[in-house]
Length: 112
Image 1 (cartoon, rainbow, N blue to C red):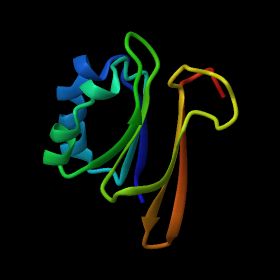
Image 2 (cartoon, rainbow, N blue to C red; image 1 turned 90 degrees about the vertical axis):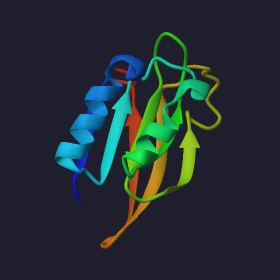
Image 3 (cartoon, rainbow, N blue to C red; image 1 turned 180 degrees about the vertical axis):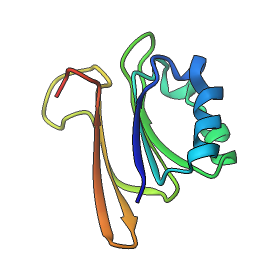
Image 4 (cartoon, rainbow, N blue to C red; image 1 turned 30 degrees about the vertical axis):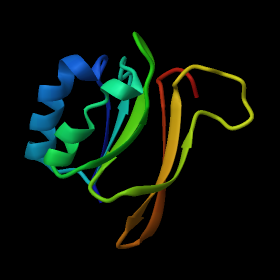
């Protein structure tokens, strides 16, 4: 299984680079940090057109994390349950793989 991580520092700005990278490298999962966009602006259709699913939690101007994967994610948890922090800095999800379930956790750098 090929997993990568990328601090995109604005998915809106870097989306063409992300799509090109996905096409060239074909990872099973890509963990993104610092999306810097709200959920309603997340490029779901662009990623689906590239053959990927995505789970995400965004925030305007800063923060925001996502898991982009070839297979749908399940058991998605956004932020830290029971921890009163409104910042979009953590997401976790399980991917089903040929070797069994794989739990991924993505956090904004410096926060975990």
